Amino acid sequence: MFRIKAQKCKACGDPLQGRSDKLFCDDRCRVQHHRNSSELHAMRIGVDQILRRNRALLADVRSKMHRQFTSLDCAYWLRRKGFNFDFHTHILHLADGRMAFMCYEEGYLLDGNGIVPWPTSSNHPKILLSAGPSA
Image 1 (tube, helix red, strand yellow):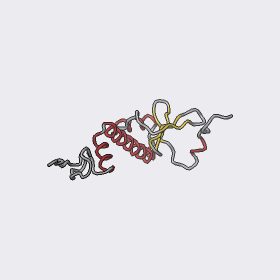
Image 2 (cartoon, helix red, strand yellow):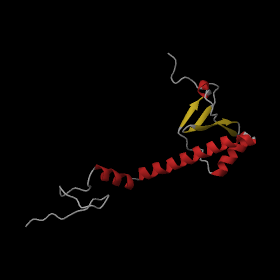
Image 3 (cartoon, one colour):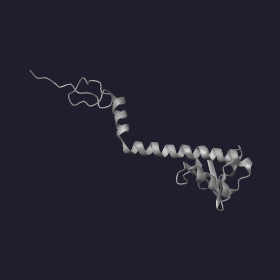
Image 4 (cartoon, rainbow, N blue to C red):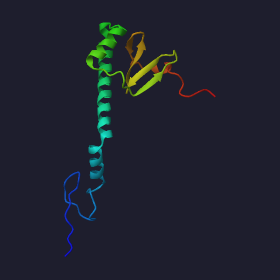
């Protein structure tokens, strides 16, 4: 008598039913297994952690501006707290030629040797350049 050996799902370990070459219960298990075993997924998690930390530190330094930090003090403070200047979500080009480096909605402007936290006021989009080239 021909007998098919019972296999288990690679993701959840439940017994598989159906085709003999089946590896996963369903698409959810297949995707879960792929994400857990993917080096790219691990890298994304690491980058996301860095960006979240950067965002939290930028919000913190902006709230501490009442202490009269200089732009150099802000840069040193961020570096001491573990801010990674190599990671940001996007860059805004300002009408005055400066650039704002953003981590989600928080950001900073380069100012000589230091940085200035991005303002949270509602009028800051007015200083941005237009999105596309003029025709």
